Image (cartoon, rainbow, N blue to C red; front, side, top):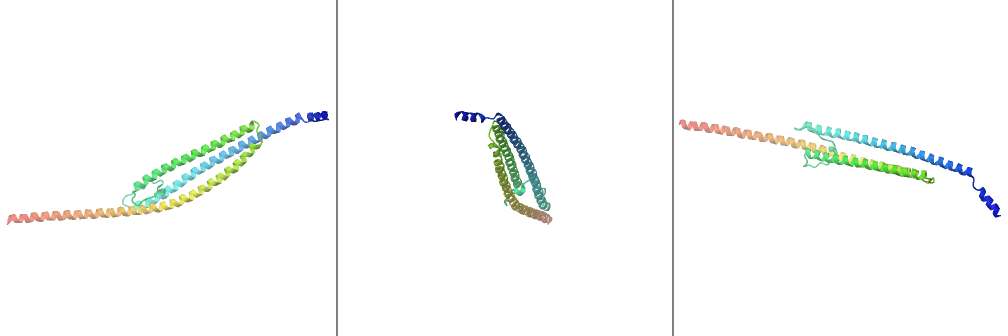
Length: 242
């Protein structure tokens, strides 16, 4: 019985089957590695395309806003005594108080543009850091698989993909919300800008009228003074003759 058992045990190892299993495992590993590479290059391409699209969208939005504000200011300035819209980027996004001068508003717009530029650069840096982290994690998984890991890590990227898709959908939703909010704020700011431009024009007009009135009064006073002096001189001459 023991001998038969021993014989059975000896017959359990099949070197040909073991070699075939090893080859299949190597082929599986190679296939998983190729799939990972393909998925990573596709993700890189998607990320680059999304960044390019976002950049051009932002440029186009900025150009449209600039044109609209420039046209608004140009219309009001053309009717006023002074003119020239000047450095108007982002004016439609700046809150305006009644006491503000045009230069105050433009200075505030400049500060806001600089802050937005810095925030945008920080977002790009953050996105680049995240992409780098993802790449490192993927390389680590690949090394673990190459070192003889099981098939389990090959399943992990599928979960990562689902997670990434969820994050992308959430980010898109958040972008939509921000876009709507920005559009609403822009409408309010544009209305405030138009109101300020109208008030500024009326104030300039009133000031010009006041100045003209004052000049007229001074001229009349001067004429009256000259007439009085001439009258006095004539009166004095008459007195001397008498």
